[in-house]
Amino acid sequence: MSGNGQGDTGVGKRPETKASAGPGGVDGNVASGKRPALDDSTVGGALRSVYQQTVNEDIPAEMLDLLNKLS
Image (cartoon, one colour):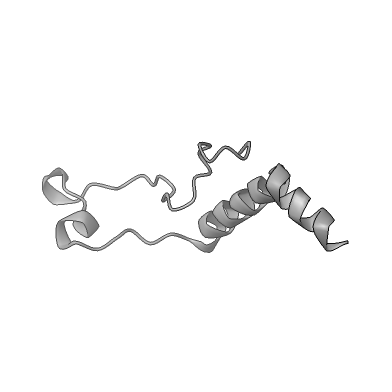
């Protein structure tokens, strides 16, 4: 993200999962209102990705100005 607030970080988005269709072509989890389970590796990968994007962001000029006033 370039600091303009318009980048897509993927925060709040669920990773896409392939649903397996049950009898009649309807996924049992969807029909019953349950969400499909996400394994730990999927969640961990998503968290690492968001963290790395955050680390790589530029520090806004306004924040640098404020930090310079402290010293």
